[in-house]
Image 1 (tube, rainbow over the protein chains, first blue to last red):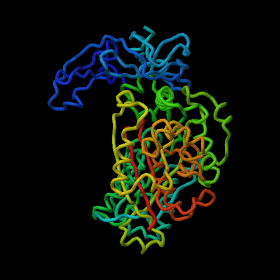
Image 2 (image 1 turned 90 degrees about the vertical axis):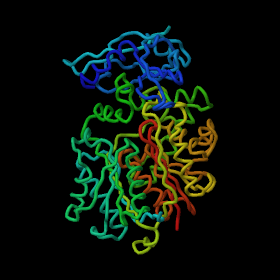
Image 3 (image 1 turned 120 degrees about the horizontal axis):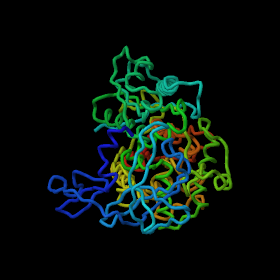
Image 4 (image 1 turned 90 degrees about the horizontal axis):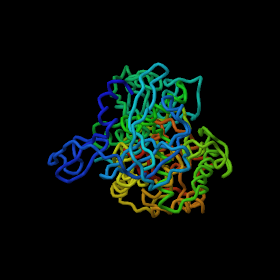
Length: 130
Length: 388
């Protein structure tokens, strides 16, 4: 992903800054500027997520694109955050066998990947067992 | 609205064609379809071409014009439009053609699909395909396509009774069918052991759970039903065309193991055709991964959630079963040139209904269905076809 495209979302990627609809109470991460339930009647405000949640489903990725190939095998999961929003992220564990559906996890700040050998290093949120 | 029929079909052999270009492929399929419909080029009003990612695969955009040009139709100045919805590009191109004819805006319309995927290495094609999901919040954190479908499989297997062997049987069945399809990329039967011992790609999905990277093109010609007999003795009627969308990212779905867009498009199609599930003789579904076929059978309403694995194991979806699924070999064995797949599904339905499906021909098939998925289910096109 290009540098400006990544840079633009740094607060979201580093600190889980998402959004919240004050009308229906839903929380959004990845952030949305329009509530899909309330649409124009919604009132969207910022919300920083606590970063705790549980694994809804996961897989162990063994073949990846270049950007992630030096990380294989790595655990990819859909995490449901305590506030209700769901996001896709990597789970950092010593042994992928440790991971299970329903596992409690918490967010950590980690290196995501490198854009080629001399490219920009990108960082973001991964999860570890809570 | 006018009734619409398919009057011609054409499909290249699917495979890794190092010696054939994007242009070679679509011209071959287009000429076959036009010949099959006994048409002259100047009778064609418009063209819709499904293509996912020529920009990434061959660094070429403006596909609509390119195809019209090399099909010899630039001199006719016909309207030619590229349609993109990831792996559902072909299904949507077909739907656009049907809508154009049904509305009366056009009479003879070609719907095609093409993808040339092997001009780049596997890493780039994997990355290009990941663009069918949410690049900013799935691809950017390391999600691959097999990985996303593997997460569907793990969710499904956690909640419903589906064994690893039942999942593998989807691939075994589709290879059996592909071995009877002369255009299939893999015309070789496999055993459960082949699947179970193949390389792990993204747990629990192994290499033989995944559709391959493929070069290929397919084209069909549609016309008003009332004039279809002028071109062919065996026009195949389009009984329903339906399309639905859902969230782009898998993590935002209401239910990870249910493709709500398949449910919606399927329900709309059955309503439009005025048919019941039991009226369908065969289905071509989007088995980009074995788990996708399991979900498709259930989400189209042919059985309850959690039953498709057992039905597959029992032979219900086999060539001689009650509801044959993917007689072409599906994406798994026939191959998956992404933009062409939706059109190839239509070609297979038409061949079965005409009785021209050779070694995989079904007895007395009257009504067939196709289901084409984009991404992990963010776009779905469903069509129903019948003999006239």
